[in-house]
Image (cartoon, rainbow over all chains, first blue to last red; front, top):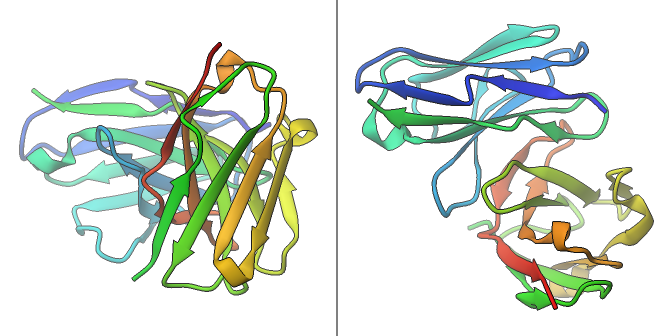
Length: 106
Length: 117
């Protein structure tokens, strides 16, 4: 199995901050990396697919980057509605998810 | 518009079989693939398996021995059956449209399943 490690597990930031979430794979996943946002009591929502492709309807303050084993989700200016848990997911064999980063307001 | 809705029993006894249904609308199961993904309370996500638009299936190797996914295209329904349930199978179970690049772009609301006697 490919293991996905997300850091940090908890992140506190202020409105307007630039926020960076990290995801590291246990082996090369060739950019097959997706990001989801999950708000409390809701289903996950796809934000970014194939490392840096923004899903339709997602605000442009969300962006993704990375290659090999290291990937990043960036929120350019944090908004109150961005409070959520963020999961990365790889597909190089069968899909596996990271444990999530919980983003809260400072 | 695209919709998925999971249904099934909220409570299952240990060692019994779980049967869930995902009823979809706004798209065709012969043109789209559906996965089941579960999430234990307060924990992360686990992909369980998928049924592809052509009808073939793929399963998480950790669950393969006790999991079956099927569909009825005429009723726009996808089914999950998993046997030998244990307390660690307690989770919210989601169905989700799965693309060929294995990202999940539409999700149902999820159904909570508790395994308990």
